[in-house]
Image 1 (cartoon, rainbow, N blue to C red):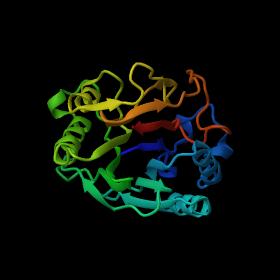
Image 2 (image 1 turned 90 degrees about the horizontal axis):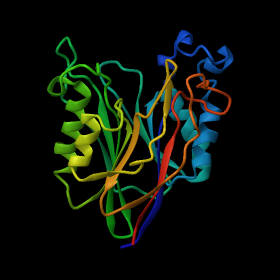
Image 3 (image 1 turned 45 degrees about the vertical axis):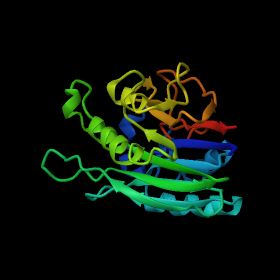
Image 4 (image 1 turned 180 degrees about the vertical axis):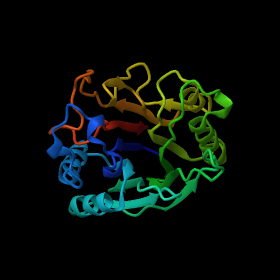
Length: 261
């Protein structure tokens, strides 16, 4: 069956996580709560994607985006993190009805022993006879010097691969989001070892400019049966302001056209 669609992933930056001192090059007016909802909606619409996977979405921002995107044919789904976290993951799509969705909550634990509350939102689609499963996630940050077997983001990635991707090998998979890891690191290599392909392989550009350090930490992986044509990204430098009037988050959205003949 032929598959031809555009998919995007975007960490929209939760208002709850904004501290002005973290964004010294951003005018204070652009950091006010709710001030970025309209620019985020326009940025998302400009991607012209059939499926948009969002991270750090709060209930208020989800409602605002749903109101703005619905007239353009988008349907939205959201799953909130647990343990009192203010945000979660959301998927907006314009593919008609989905086949269903579920929130998979990871079993990794916080330092106090509680389940972390992080998740992957998985949405199923029928793409002309092929079943496409899209997993949107925001993997937990952990210290880069923590041993791999103890790294919490790695634990979540391993669980996502083993409990979702490998248990349904017949589906076409897309796994995307903010991985809080860089190209070549063990967490990223785990998805490649599982047979998924990196849409931006060999052409990564920085996707986030946190603390004046541009870095590529957002990924879009897909089944090997699909071919990807990724969008080029604006160049980020250490002093590139984010959020800004042009970019309403501290991340850039990534997007690719996925095809199967």
